[in-house]
Amino acid sequence: MKISQEALKSLAMEAVMIPQEEMLEIGRKRKNLYIGIPRETSFQENRVALVPDAVALLVSNGHRVLVETNAGKASNFSDNEYSEAGAQIAYDTAEVYKADIIMKVAPPSSEEIALMQPRQTLISALQLSVQPKDTLKKLMSKKITAIAWEHIRDEEGIFPVVRSMGEIAGTASILIAAEYLSKTNNGKGMIMGGVAGISPTEVVILGAGTVGEYATRSALGLGAIVKVFDSSLYRLRRLQNDLGVRLNTSILQPRALEKSLKTADVVIGAIRAKGGRTPCVVSETMVDNMREGTVLIDVSIDQGGCFETSRVTTHTNPVFDRNGVIHYCVPNIPSRVPRTASIALSNIFGPLMIAIGDKGGSDKLIRSDLGFRAGVYILNGTLTNPILGEAFGLPYKDIDLLSAGL
Image (tube, rainbow, N blue to C red):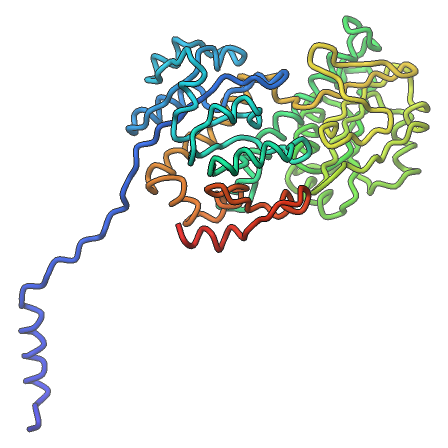
């Protein structure tokens, strides 16, 4: 039987008018987190993973935060500030390591791993170059999920922690150089930058990455003459575009570099290696040909350094003199300004903890967030980082395959 078009419209209207079953969105199961912040025990590590303001944010969102006494003391955050923010203060280190999520700045020591509980989540630095094989095995045996914060990416594919610490190190490197140019630190007795009628300070910066960019910004802001060297023409162009000014830049060529170093007052080594050791671009001969009183700041020292004459120094004994050239080779420059660095870390970790809670736990965020997943090097006891696996001869599995089953 043929049905007219009018009849079809009538039937459709009747169907629309029939009460329908309500379709409700299925909400995600939120999880209240239990976060432990231990006091850092690594040599000259003064930062803390979460500052009181970040703790207050987490507590107001229903999360529990346990902070070891004096965890923030080196960054000038008191136990009282943490307590007022809603944190619980623990006077026993072992108590802090009973939390579900442990947040540290430095990698855990063997003693700290011994205090950890099975199937905890650890968020800290990885520091591949100093990671002992035994540390990995102990974390794996306890089925820990370990996340390296320097490998976490944001929605734009940028490493936010590395970028933030690079900004601090670059800015601080110029301020440090200014200190050692002054007579109070047995320097030339010069001011960083320049004033009317006096030739400005000459600053050579090796590397056009984040550290080099912020060192350049600071030096230009003080009125110095700046020349930036890098092996990549793309990075040099990008630096000029980001700063919006015409810079004196050059590809890393030995003759051009040596010529600039002979007249430099300050040299900042800010070259980073993607893997392994930083290339040594300034030879011993180049250093010997520099003027007396020149200040070298080797920000790359944690990857071996880019000056042939560099050797690791400490915050308590930061410099040494070689033929009148002052060398500053302290790793972890952000720890020199721990309050600023801790706030910068908290600006990243606070929202990250909120996201973990909203997703229902770290496993759920690992599964859904590619940037967070990039930081995982052990997942529930299984090594997922191929670099570590190949370096130490340990079996590893693909993180994407493992996370699919979470």
